[in-house]
Length: 206
Image (cartoon, rainbow, N blue to C red; front, side, top):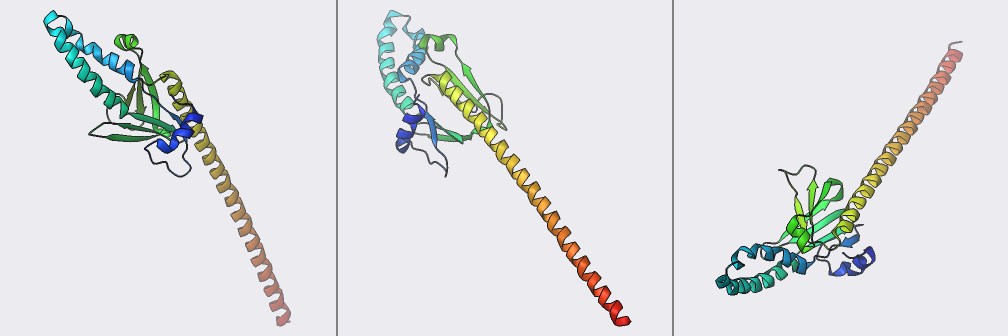
């Protein structure tokens, strides 16, 4: 995983469109070698027989080339507002997940994953349809640190939004008090004008 300084330096090469005021916090790196080793486990059943070992080696070679291309198409970029995720070679999928929508960032490490040395991060959001994670990130380098960065940035974003809402409410209240003061001054001025008119009418009637 790139540090915030490295992420800022690499920002021009990131193929995402940043909104005004949005800045890159971190860029996830994927451990392609460990991800390939994890998927190789599925080839174990067909390598049990001696006659199938050459076929297994041939499949493993093609599998490696394909998985390298697949992993190279993955990206996950954390900004101060959102988590941008891209996947796919032919069918490209891009998701921009606002940080305030993230409810949980689970970390899964099964037996085979532990053997391969990787974890799977599952991103769950508020309002998503169906159970399970909306987006999964498999094999992020130093996944625990990246998970902590996302959660910290989410909490920071929520605190900032709450502070902005509090300031807006206070400004609205201050504006309301100013409006009431102005109305009171206007009414007092009108009352004084009416009193002067009444006094003048009394003088004229005499």
